Image 1 (cartoon, rainbow, N blue to C red):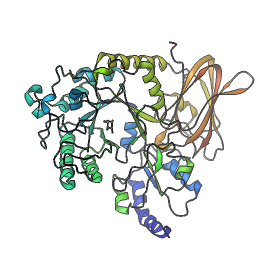
Image 2 (image 1 turned 180 degrees about the vertical axis):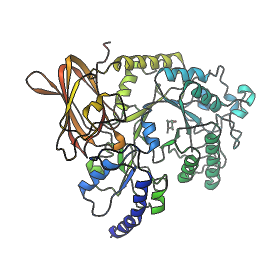
Image 3 (image 1 turned 180 degrees about the horizontal axis):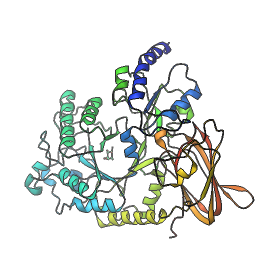
Image 4 (image 1 turned 45 degrees about the vertical axis):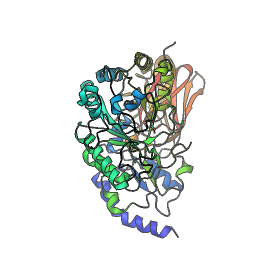
Length: 523
Ligand code: FUL
């Protein structure tokens, strides 16, 4: 019964999709063995069997903004606002703006610490659920305007952005749709207009904003009413004013990894199901095709993208994971937590379980009531960076003689060791197996491997194994499932002169951008 309308839709969509494919042709065309890649979604058509679905999943690729975001890897989050001064995690919206009064506000100190820690962007809570605005919004007086700080003339967002520009960090904005202060909240059209207005201010007045962070919290407002958020209209404002930005959470660009612990899944797929039945030809051909049909599903599920999971999908899209976690027990600063800051070793473990599992790491480091980052947090951040620098200082696989089972023209195995993310090895068309063998000039000892797929051609690898040659035989020392943008594997130290990486299962021919072997510093 349901098949007929879907088929009709598919016929309708076909010309639009062909058009899209032509219009969005990528400058980085793959070799002949890789099909043309240009869309971050795929329609499953009636009659598509399991093999077609798997092939389609392998062909879905990130958009330009998603690709740029993925390479940012390590992002700072700063929860700062009314809660910093009331020592709470969630404010009620009734707080007196006079409470907001940092004594030594110094965003340059934060941003320098983030830069020194190797972070690439800072996302600031411009407004949390209590509704207090860190910028002088024209839409409310519940903001820095009504605080004693700088005589009501201050602008936290403006100063933080300025510091980010000075140190070369990108900027992201957290703007809570749930607003426990704003009287129009719950009066749906009115508040939607208010919220779009605030978005417009933030996305117009502060230069490039590269990520907008939306959680889905939807509690009651001051009048006890719940708001019906008009998400597509919010996306429209963002797409128009900052088309290069990705939207996190309640939007089809970047998903929540599903935990707040810093630990993502071992098997992390960036291609997941989406219901595309509402997508018409015009929407499909628009620059942001998924904005009108996106609905968040259960992102806490253990499996979001296996063959079993996608088997019944009506569509698939590129929806990569971001792992948000706080360096402290809470998101906001609380003096009682000063001795509960995560240690450098814990942060490194989190890095391996997020960046090392095909995700980005969004690490929250909350400024205190002075408006500075506490020394304990700075120490942990820098300690983490020192461990990562010592770990990744030299790729022990560099300089190896490298052979592959086969290669497509122009995509030989040396590409995985050349330090260039835009070159990759891929086997010859129709190859049945895919393996790389590396021989070093001498014995090497390592306890960590890095593998990266060239995700601009899609995420394909489902399982792989690493083996060492002991002079007589190959012995497996590490195994992994998905790779995606980056996979880091830790194992007991191995000493070998020859190492083999075998792709055991893949959705299409694998395309690998990087391989590395490293040794963690001894403690
Ligand atoms: C959640 C919020 O409710 C928390 O307060 C915090 O901002 C976290 C990052 O997102 O949904």
